Image 1 (cartoon, rainbow, N blue to C red):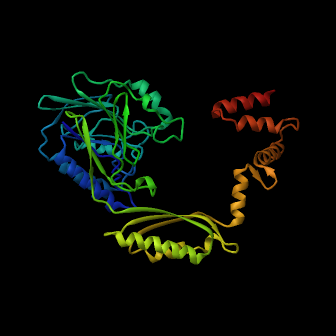
Image 2: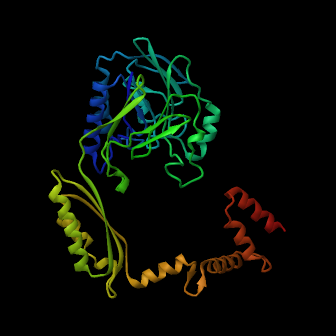
Length: 400
């Protein structure tokens, strides 16, 4: 069977509401023509409580999918206290944008209750066509620190005699190495034939437990980051050939430019920004989205408010969606302060000593005994151990 993976459509995203809906519609229509199964690994909606018009748009969109003459059909559903109300092979999990308190319904649940999709969050859905069976186990987006415990609790297992897909919506440490709470590839359950993930908006292709791990990325631009300059679309996977392709959808151009300055004047900033914007517009057929990052220093006597950022955005408002970040364009004096912070000093006083001084003064205000060692207590509270351990150690120290 052929499986289309359409992720992070973010229907209802206010900044680009038309783009979100039209690109989701194009992706799902193409997917329904090319695939036997459509997988939606989270963030179908942009908010956990979409406006009524957004819900109506989504109902109309998925109703059209349900009317298609699908040859593949849902033949079995095994969920913990949840039910399946359709045999249409459009299978989804909730994402972080749809997440609500445990036990509370979210907008994806509503589509499931209406019989327009199969919500396979913490459930197994089995689909069959011409004797071939595909089993999808889904884990909806949950808080990062709970994922490992949840996987241990659920203990997902592949279904014998089926092509098994594990679908989740989480941050992955190997892709985003920012937090130890993020799960690793190795934390994912073994024995599945394909791993599918949402949440991350750029395309990722990797191997997990000797099998493919695929993230198609979002179908709409929601973050003005360089990694989102690539084409948007969905992935089409063939279970027989164990191969896949990326299918593009039409999107507006998104361009990021980083401009470096040294002792810049407002006039120089204006001229260089205009040159970059005009060069992008000359190659664009539609109203592009442009992100410009300004970096470096400005001439003494000027401040960030003197830079013509607002004027530029107003000038090009009809021709482009323009976002200019001037937060890293600073005066030489500010640059020196930044370097001081990088060297762990503020003026002639190291930052840590300044922190201890403020902390000590606050302890005195609160009436703590003068013999209390502010520096020792500060080191305990600012250590790398977890919060609970830090508080426990601090209380033991104060008792002593």
